[in-house]
Image (cartoon, rainbow, N blue to C red; front, side):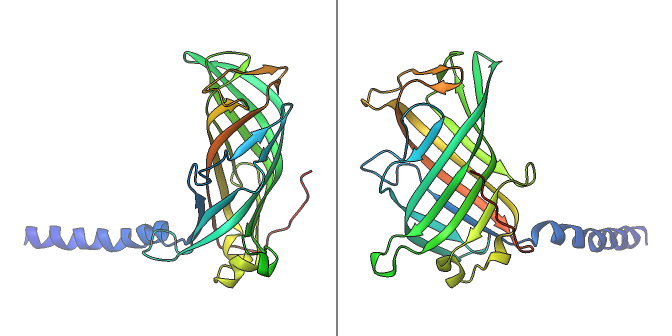
Length: 235
């Protein structure tokens, strides 16, 4: 009888816990990504100095869209042009471990367009960089490190805005499917000066790049279904 009572109590506890588990795993996200150095014959990013970072001209990537979160399938790959224009500001340098953590505020605009001249390069996805953070870990207080990240989450700032283009809507991902939990991260790797020297010191003066540089990079983003987003111009 005791064994039966314990079994009944365990089953009851599982029945109570099940809705909580389901609630935590039932959300459906759409994710976006491209791999580092997918543009294999040129760098991904560039800066001509100052506080601006751009895409390298005419960079084409395989942008992977996963429409059903962690479920099997749901992948669509677009050959896409990548437009990236970001302005930095408010530099800080903080001692951290053996080096220094450099951080900047970032704002700008990112656009992925389908690489198809016959259809006029229609937009896949646009992301407003409203209140992003660009950061780099460096051995020096006055140089950029050889890696960096740019990231932003609406859970923190509310400044990131995703807009679905015609190509995204065409595969069954409307604007309402990507209006919540918007977040993205870019990586910058193999940062080097424009002469191609490996891992040089990109000098900083009052938080600005005094040297031109290029880098490889990757991208990942995710968003969930919600209401309708309101787009503003960050620049």
